[in-house]
Length: 611
Image (cartoon, rainbow, N blue to C red; front, top):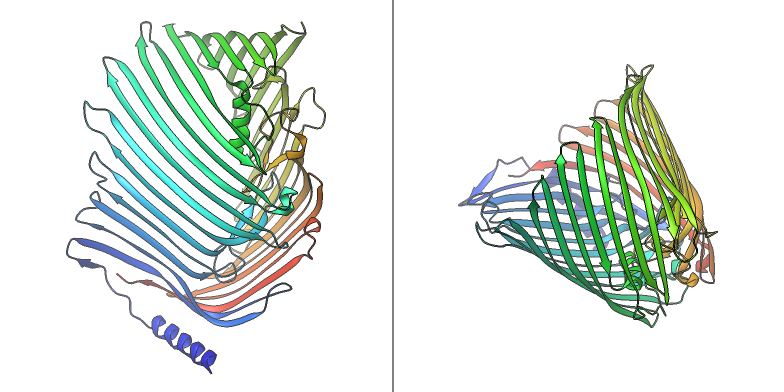
């Protein structure tokens, strides 16, 4: 009886709201406000193999409330809300009904003391656990974020700005019993001042986070990560004769992280300086020096910044690096630039001292070619190592071209590098990547194709490569139909974090192999949409991804299938909507069967401009 009364109330409320007349804008004293949105009563059904079926009449919609007080530069605000929104009843990206709010306000925007505050909250919303180059794993959960910013800018006084952000999320991965959590906080302070021709700046930043990584992507029963970091520094610059300038900065970074009971902490001090002059317009000379008192810490910090930890790595062992570099540039023509450089790098790392002398040059050229634009760059470097006496030749090149050929708009790019220096002088990196696309229009008919690929890895270390390929095509006859398709594949090494797999940021010999995840797979998708009549839209999309991951001792074959269909018809301010969404996702390493969940919706919505 209670359920019947609830359904009856929702239906009556929805019909009453649909009949509500549109009101004009309303002013309340010094407040000027606007309120618009949609109200959507309808029938919704959700069912799956791991969830109980639900069949309900629901009341959903979205609203946006904005306005100002006294003057928009004094106080302005905006608040948007959504209730029971999903792929089945709107373009909202959620397999299940999601609700939430986003609120922001700006104060004193027209003064020297502007500030802002923002907050967002999401319930039962869809998220993603990212996989490089492939379709992401689908998650669902709750999240919230909060941020506040303020700044001061007075004439003849130091400027100052401050910002604080915090947020958290809890989620579960469809197809597993695994739970994930993320939480973060950060504080940023900046100040700048100009005195007697010196431009000075200082900053302070502090942040941290906590993550609980799902077992299926971590290879452990429980994988928790904690990290805290802080940084502060000072920089100064001044103009020099001969159209030149000089700048210098000093920075200190501290970190403290914990991963499965393994702790890592330390600090890094860096000093950077640069001086440059332009004796004539076509010639420039520059010299730079960079010093770090903790090279090991820089390696660990790059991993921590990606969301990981290096357990057992001794960051307190003495290590440092010094980089000295001089560059001379010459521009003989507006479309041609050349330069030559000499560099000395020394590093003390893991009880050994390394040094490399590098010499080289580069050229950048741009010109019209076959009614198009072509530009290219080439850099060649000769490296000589102190310890081994080995000489290596490194180079990198990049080309870009765009034009119209026989009615086709085409553009493409290509990059290739061999023996490019990394953070550690003992490792060289090689890579290539290319991309291209073409499109053409015949009246209402549109055709487009594109492709791209990339590969990168350490030159002398087998098994460190990451590679990816992607292809896409589209065909449209507006407004009757638009068809799209794509295919991608990738494989390589990654680091498991609270938000997804990220490419390994440091050489594998430095990062313990038990922290490195191996992944590989492919994904493809198709989409079709049509507007056969005015204000009548039909759309459908399908995507499938298969992958394999090996993380520690856990190997898993993973599958992700998604299908979505949406039908909409607009009559004046009414929208009639019907939609269907289906997700099938599973992981062999989870020990549970794949999960299938479907959602169906049929209803009507009305747009309002309340005031």
